[in-house]
Image 1 (cartoon, rainbow, N blue to C red):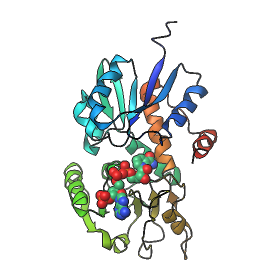
Image 2: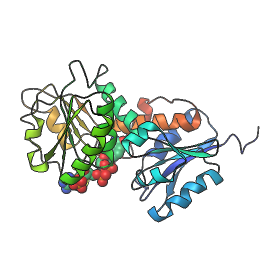
Image 3: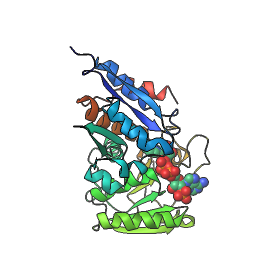
Image 4: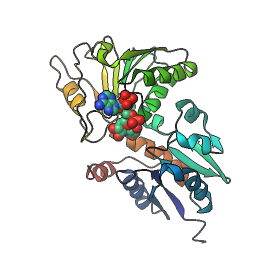
Length: 291
Ligand code: NDP
């Protein structure tokens, strides 16, 4: 066996990148399946991104993940971009295919699967979980969430962000891709009222993350049957999710960000290593041990 041709190399490119749990996740699967390969940290400053991406091919990488701040900037530097990633406007997974650098977005798949873990029959367009959705935030994580909701035919999406111009720009972009959805933006100071009649609430801001301010939000207007999601995974239960779980009058079903993180990794792993690994309790324990 030729060692060079059977060794699969992938990694995560970001700046900073040390906080990333992806090496733990992919390393677990590489060992579990006895694969020849490695998944490494690739700290790359924004100015070095074009050179670093060119270097992937030269170094024999199967591809890499991208994280802050490269997910949007990389779009213009690739040979090809998958149509879903183009609609999302961000790539988190690069694959070297026949000498070409191809961009995908597996964050959307990650979010969808995290919802289906909590509600196996979840659909945005019909059934008990359909209805308006309020999305807090308009950054990178919001893009993947909005694409999932648009792809799945959510009837109405209300985007509420501190900087309203960013919410408006995002809604202009996504309403062109998903015209069947009614798209609205709401001022940040109306976020409590934005929850009225919603079937789902998603926090995609960094508020509530360890080391950040808490999200100041009153859930009174939110119907009790609404799904409450937070893309944050440190802590696993943000103050928002705790408030939703403990809400007087009935607990909400809640979804934390760990499922999205694990499922986006699973889809990326399949691109590079050619097999779809499992998300086992042992893997969850390994990742949770890093928090
Ligand atoms: P961005 O920097 O792109 O966006 C941050 C968002 O948070 C913006 O909407 C910003 O509003 C808002 N925000 C930040 N501070 C405040 C504040 N003080 N008050 C009100 N709003 C605020 O970050 P990302 O979208 O990449 O990440 C957001 C969170 O999602 C992080 O916690 C990250 O860890 C998590 N994440 C989880 C993933 C997963 O797989 N589970 C994947 C990706 C991210 P404004 O526009 O006004 O600045």
